[in-house]
Image (cartoon, rainbow, N blue to C red; front, side):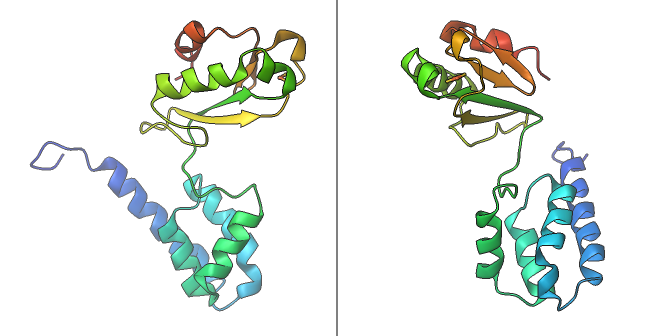
Length: 165
Ligand code: FES
């Protein structure tokens, strides 16, 4: 605890991740061809790719930051946003769309205080959209981690989400 009473644990944890990244980068100095391998390792470390990490990678591998950003945005398995412990995907495939999917998404955004593609400040939830999860008969559907929920009512979303820590 600092004198203001705030815990510095998260900050210390983050600093140690950057120290780990430095160690990883030592083995790839000046080796631009290792970019994708290094990005995978960095994402494994942080859970996503923070801007500061991308800048360190660009510097050490001797590639431009634009090149690094180009690779990160090209491959959808890389993410520059922190992801939550639980992933919510609201289905907006045709069947779900016509049976209230957009309303489910809107309510989930409102309940969680985030938009599609974002993560809550406590990293508990990430919210996104999918196009059909094969449960069209249960439209509108949503999926939380690996659990499928059908005929989702906007009034029940928070009740569903309460189970997920
Ligand atoms: S369209 Fe939503 S499950 Fe198929």
